[in-house]
Image (tube, rainbow, N blue to C red; front, side, top):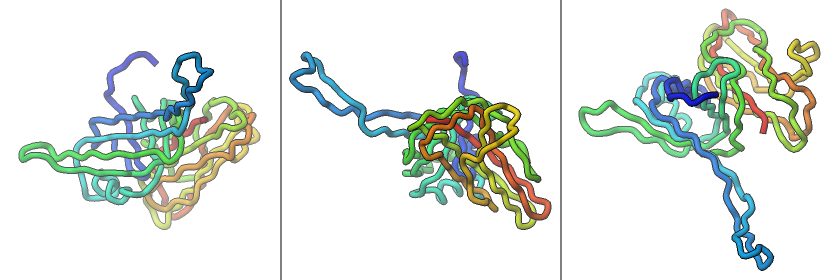
Length: 244
């Protein structure tokens, strides 16, 4: 990816797309350094990696009135944990994405008279920050059972995990329900798919995150698949996944 100007950054909170109400998103990650300097360190400070952490800080224009708006979503999430996905450019299938399971730690609103009403907030990680891709875009409504585009992420070595975040952004119809899962296969055709991670059935906007158990996966291709039930159901959702 060449150098670029931030024009269409995407921010998905558990069950809300905050992109249209955001004008600044900052993603940071660090590993704590622990001093292990001793007499055999050749006169140099010696450190090893300690605890890792990640943080998402966002701000933008305040809106309220339904669960998709930043005020409603922020109040419902404050003090709770959920999945968050940040895309530097866009959220099309295969786009670069960063996903994390984190705690919504703060929410701030208000400014001086005459100013556009702002908001700001912070999420701090409870799981590792994962660099991955978008497996399902937010702008396609799904009304029937199906599967998404295959992504070639490569194998998962022993000790690492496949992580996936599901953001259900809207649900319509009578008793609509969607149950999503992440499948893998050794080829793009998915002739023998294997379920690697499964999400609980969702009937309303919200977010879920899942990860594998740390065992090696020799398959190289991954996709999201879903079962939809109900009377005239329709769902808008986004899925991100990656290996760490």
